[in-house]
Image (spheres, rainbow, N blue to C red):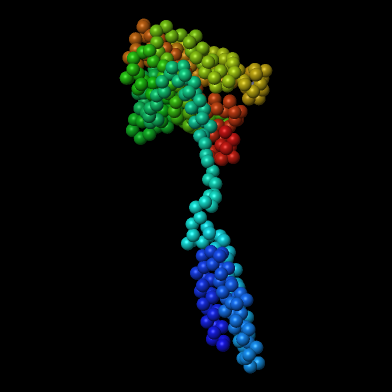
Length: 335
Ligand SMILES: [Zn+2]
């Protein structure tokens, strides 16, 4: 009798392990533990046995019943959690969400600027970040011994190469294949060898513009910049020109924008002046025009360079350029 109980127990445990559905488990429960189940039948026969044997078989039967119930409970949980069971794939089970990123705020700013200039008929050109002194300085009217080179100190690479300090070299390269009239913008990374602080970094994004045509003047430059800034800030923006020196333009200007935070009344961002420095610009120097293969007696042009980081910071009220390249998601996720 004891052997029969053990046989039923082992057979039941194997069947339970093989069950794949709740229904199968329910059927096994009836088959072994139900009122007419195999184990129940054995227990009914106990009364016919001698007392000693009855106790021994009774204990075996109860142990078998307990083992089978436990095995069924375990198997039921496994069957109900299909994804945790390697042999079953539930394709409709919801997946775990993956975080989606977005464009860097400076990239967003560059795209906005490109869209605005393209709507004015400008062409976007790009070029190498590693340049020769010829394109970065010489052809831009900054000879080797000129003190202006100190202002654009940069990183020199082995041999005769340097990291460009502006995207003007790309304009020179572009003019090797073009004839006026031209309207170009050149966005890209530029480099300066200088100490980092909240307003300066050794790398930032520039967007330079060049227009060459007959009769182009500083008035066209002012109108273009005002239109551009109105489109960026979505409102009319006052600008002012201050005389300044850049070797590649004559005359040259620093262009200030009315402080967008205080509206020109003075605050800490504009150092109580009501104006913030925004960009450098000017009408193209005749020597540079000649270096571009353009006759300055026939054509004139204007050029400007806007820091995209600075523009983005002014738009969003960011006060430290180093945040932009920190890779800190708490900062980047705000844009
Ligand atoms: Zn202000």
